[in-house]
Length: 244
Image (cartoon, rainbow, N blue to C red; front, side):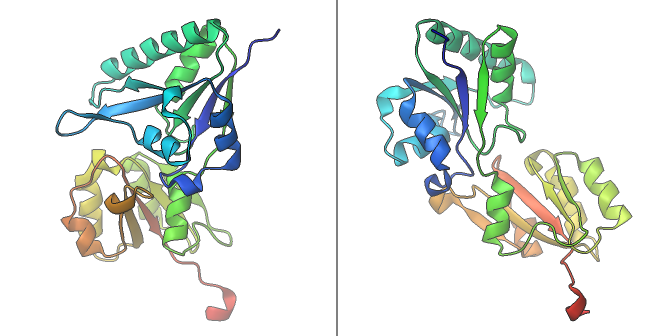
């Protein structure tokens, strides 16, 4: 009998209601659901992935949590991913159906992609189920299209790429999705304080209940201390022909 693949399930932006049916069914069918957890300021381990999963009625007994160190140096995180991949491989060898929970979408800056690479290097079969990324949910929250007409969409964590595209000029209907902005908070605020900056939409903890915060007010953004779960969309509003 062919062993079942290890499935990476993308949970979406944080609101359990935005989980796809496909992901929900994969979670239902799993014997073990692997969830990342991180330590908060008080040193308590929490898992947003686990919260999303249990909110849709999946049994907590299925959950296997692994700790991800939140450090700038990648060595500790890589070691945690390797240890997790080894644990998954051992459970898979016993014939268990395993899914790995991913916040957002596995294809977009997902650190758990590293686990998938370790598993593939070990000769195991990996499959991925897509989910709604945070910037798609953000576009809906701001009731504004991400891209229109002949505009372009750029998704990046690179401040130099952001600067380059802003200096070149965003055409109407174009947007830049700036992810992981905590790491370049000062540069973002420097841009926002400059005259003539484009419109923007800032969001943090999107879909995470009372913690969610969104705004298009640049003064409010300037006053924030960006948390880990924060991103921003810079855009040049589309002008249709009949509005020109």
